Length: 67
Image (cartoon, rainbow, N blue to C red; front, top):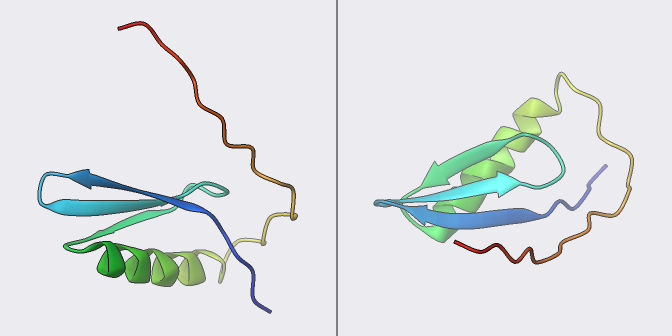
């Protein structure tokens, strides 16, 4: 079975950090492609022991904050 997940990618120092939005899994790499490949591997390992979440939509919305 295959399933698509959403990820955010941020640059933190020399690392790109990829975080899955649906489950608490993250990984990193020196390039965006490497971070996503590492996240894919981390998710596959995660789901060896955890159930796949139900396919509920993830809402993404901007939040305006005064700083």
